[in-house]
Image 1 (tube, rainbow, N blue to C red):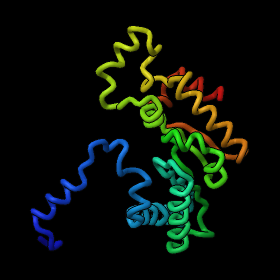
Image 2: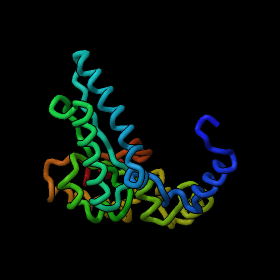
Image 3: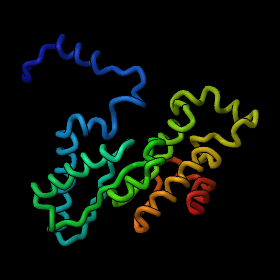
Image 4: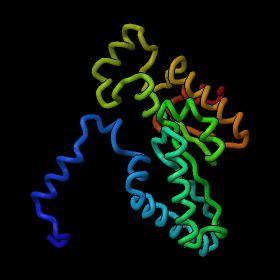
Length: 206
């Protein structure tokens, strides 16, 4: 009531926002591209907090990671917004910060040379990258992956240990293209695979 929105209108909006496949839907950087005010609010909070920490005598280094990027243009829009907020908050010139992206979408891995020229760092989001590369829903694959492992179709559950001959090849290609375009770029990994020994060993090799 305080917002002047009826319950019927609110319910209609909820129905409108429903997605049949939200894992491939309106999330990640797509939200920030269409509704930049969301990212603007988040980045402003990061910079204001970092400036407070810096004023207390510490040396913060905010690393702003853009999720679910598939095209360079998506990253550039969010990166420009980050720099804009840095100017507005007074962080520009006072605070060292980095802007990078997650590599979760196969297209981002295939065009890593383009992205690496503009990003300060890359971080593999291996759960989503596995999901999109293998065509498995990570929320539903448990119904059959156990049987696949038992039958030898997969040596291990690819959501628990990196599929080195599939997803891993894509990761290796990404690293090679990124380092060729930007030899100094930092590349990392996040997600459950980062704590699995065979996956960690593989990442060190590539």
